[in-house]
Length: 199
Image (cartoon, rainbow, N blue to C red; front, side):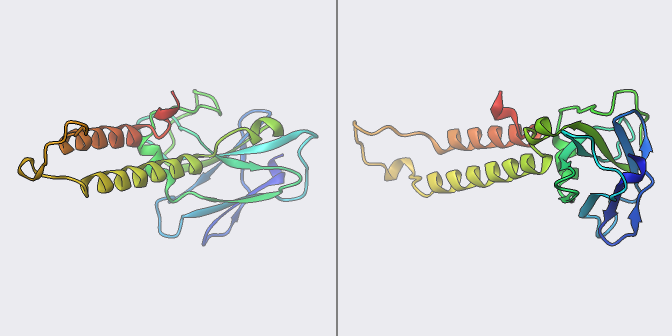
C-alpha cells in the first residue's frame, strides 16, 4: 500500500513518502502545518494498488504536541469507490487543544512528533462509515456555542429590574444571573469536550 497513497497539502507539492508502521497503518509527516495556507489536505489513492475487498482507508490527523505522543483525530476515509477526499484541517488545532479524548489508533508507543502527521489505517469500510469525523465534532461545538448565545440573548431581552416587575402570582421568574451562570458553565464544558452531552 505504500505506493498506493498520496497527500496534497494546499499550496504544496504532492507527497507520497508514507512510512509503514504495521500491516495496516501508514504515516506521513506534514512539515510546518501551522504555516500559512495549510487549511486543507487531499488524501488519495494513486491507482497502483486498490484496497482489498470490503476494506478502506481511515484518514487521521495529528497536530504536533511536544509533551505527548500523537493524538489522532478522525477526518474521514478513502476507498476504491471514493479514491480521494478533501479535508479541512484549519479548525482542527483548536479542537485538538480543547479535546481531552486520546485516540491512539496507531498505537500508544509512537514517539513524540514535532511535525503534524497524517495516518491512514486500513479498516473495514462498514465500520469507517459509522465513525464521526472530527470536523463534525467541531461543527457541534460551533452549533452549541451559537445556540447558547442565541438563547442567552433571547432571555436577556426580557430582563427587568425588580422595580419594573409587576407582581403576578401565576408567573415564575428566574434571576438573569442564574441563566448567565448556566451559560458560562455549559460553554466551558462544551469547549473542554464537545461531546460531553453524549454521556
